[in-house]
Length: 108
Length: 113
Image 1: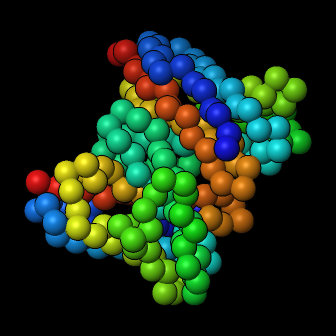
Image 2 (image 1 turned 180 degrees about the vertical axis):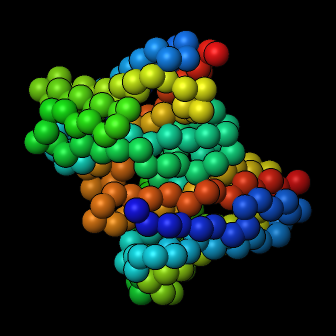
């Protein structure tokens, strides 16, 4: 299987940018996803990047992929209190593999 | 994206009973659905891959006789936890794979007393 690692916690002030980092081990991952999970809820697909891309921007979200280093990041611009949640990166190599997720806390 | 629903959203049952959880793909015909479980403050663990019209594929360490999966149609997969015990208490989430990504249901919280 694939090992996926993320920092457990991140705190930012409202209006600042958040950067959530992820490292993975399987270089054959084709799609790499970011999901958001609010308390007691399922996972919401935020965005994804294809492995032959190095950047993707979608409104406030920017995904950066360094395939050589197997490093993926999610940048949230102008972070809002509603962005407080757990964020999972999930590389897809046959199946999706999840790390422990990063709990983002936005301080008003 | 695909809309995925689960029923029930939460269930409490007595030890030794069986519980059925339904996962429906509302706007996409899914030949493949996945079942995950999530313990508090932990990541998702893939339990099994549900294949329409054939047997499910279980991950290592997941008891297929305890977690019965039926994928009878392109829009419905069910997970039955048989003879549930307190250690089966968890958050169970299904997902649907589409050409546009993998979409998750809202989850079912199972509490076994």
